[in-house]
Image 1 (cartoon, rainbow, N blue to C red):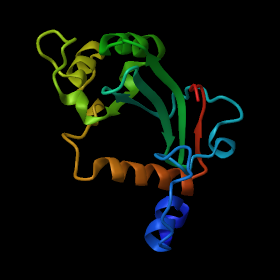
Image 2: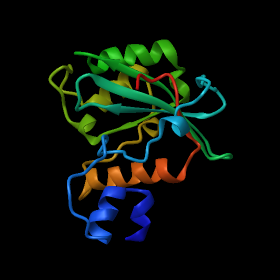
Image 3: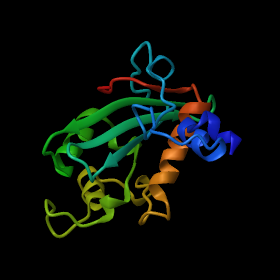
Amino acid sequence: MVWYKDIDLERYLVDSLGMWGNPTNENPFINTFNRDKHIAKIPHTHDKRLYTYISVDFNVNPMTAIVLQTDLHITKIRIIDEFRALNSNVYELCDWIKENYNTKDIFITGDSSGNNRHAYSFNNLSGYQIIKNELMLNFSQIKVMKGKPAEYVQKKRLIGNAFFSKHTDITISNAPF
């Protein structure tokens, strides 16, 4: 459990050292995020040469989606934009994507709740089916899990903390933090 020290200090203190007490972390989900390291000094712009992913979070209000790009050759992850609108729906998200990005060059991902049929949809479609139809995407542009694996939230937290702990090449810009 020593490897937890850099990823989840609170859990390391409790599980490895037996130091029980109240957590002191202000951000209990991602506690390895560091504004000085992970917020870009100069805002990122969309680079048409890089893979572009839009990750949608359906089960929150405001509905959110982040746009990120990866450069696999230099192993950088850049979060370049965010959609966030109160009382919005997937159709508004699709309009925003069409206005800002070339839909032929994007991949859509996000939480599995988007596979569920939603009250705001016509013809009883899921959120991802609406996105696919509205943006005229092919099946290979939708990259989404079916359902949640066991301990999904805990693993997502661990992976997020590991990324921010070990990779200073993750930078965020153009998002309201």
